[in-house]
Image (cartoon, rainbow, N blue to C red; front, side):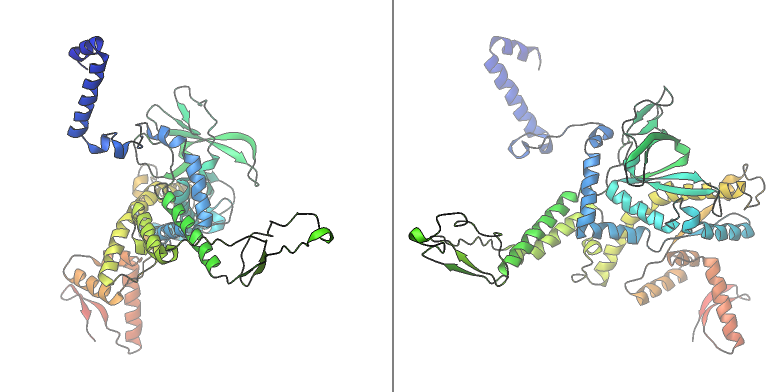
Amino acid sequence: MNWLDNFIGFISPEWGVKREAYRQYLGELRNYDAGSYGRSNSNWKATNQSAEMTDRYSRDNIRARCRDLERNSDIMNSVVGAYKRNVIGGGYTLQARTTDDELNSEIEKVWKMWCKKDNCDVTGTQSFNQMIRMAVERKKIDGGILFLKRYTDDGILPFKLQAIEVDELDNSQIIPKDNKNKVVGGIEYNRYNKPVGYWIKQYSIDGYSIENPVYIEAKYVIFYYSKKRPSQIREMSDMSPTITRIRDANEFMTAVSVKERIAACLSVFIKKQIPTTGIGRGGTNSTMGKHDYEGKTISPGMIKELNAGDEIQVVNPSGQAADATGYIKLQQRLVGAGQGISYEATSRDMSETNYSSARQGSIEDALTYAEEIELLTENVLNEVYETFIISGYLSGLFEIKDFWNKKEEYFKHDWIQAPKKWIDPLKEANSNRIALQTGQKTFKQIASENGKDWKEQIEEIKDVLDYAKENGIDMGGVIFDKGKEELYVKEG
């Protein structure tokens, strides 16, 4: 308000209010509809706060509801299952990329042994692939998971992992180890909001807290969660935007199921004009039970008497069964859209697709999964691998010269995901052949997409062709002509 508005408001408060109301009205017309508080937005109340303030008071409640749906909802499990299948699938294979081929072979051999449950898991119950598969599931449901680096005397390496849930972060801690830091949500941060330590509750096996929390430095903790805002410092369930729709679909299907079960029951009610409890002085004087019915339920083939004067009034809501399919399809599409994946990926319903649409949907879904794969590999797998290399060097398993001076060189590696089955293998094979011939793809890329090491694949092809040739069998295949120095496919 300017000085004129203040003056008018002082002389005539009524005219001051009218001028302000008219100004707000003009503001709503000139600015954003989404920002107005008109009739359509009157109940839409929202405030701007930091991510931690926004998440803090809903985090535990949302996590509990997501876990409830995890236990009881098929739609929830269809979404989580789609992520597990595509982000982890058959697991990841390590390819060491140092300049020493012998060292690469030794690292890959030891890694394969370390990934067994007795060597990588401090509890000895899960292999490494099983642990990261659980991590993807817990991130979708709980919002995140923590891995603690533990150093023990058993196993092929002293290094192991301990998976703990986000519930074990001690929210009650407020006093930092360093007075310059601050503790929020069980995590100690420096002035740049970088985690420097974690306060972990200590539980007995039955889930009750039995000891004081333990402080663990951040370098021994891997916190796997998605950060969506700069001010976000802790996890929020990935399913939070869609759990209300999932619950609505569950409640709808429960109501439809109950209605259909009742409608399927054939029952007979006998209405009598005279009560069955007796008449006159010879009858029973007690009226207990006259107007009551045992169980108040309906069951198939039921025959039941009614009290005198009672009538049956049937509540028969129509339309649910007929509309259930369309409603559930719509809900599943919205749930999938909220998670960035297609309806077909969550429902496994391919009745409305052809090859082209299924392939396009698969490509779009793959872009969503690629974000999760990137987060998993960069924040979890790579750090685990680097700690594995350091532990192997310190324990004497790997003989590496000048390790500390060139450790980044010895950390080089690739992750190869287990291959997926194609919708039409013939079309995909022809596509790869054309891409290879036209230079759009290399043999290394194609081998990686199939979950194989390109060098190992070439060696396998050579071994098969040499063995077949020795036994007088012509298997065709890929031939390298050293005279012409070119790669071609042998016909026949």
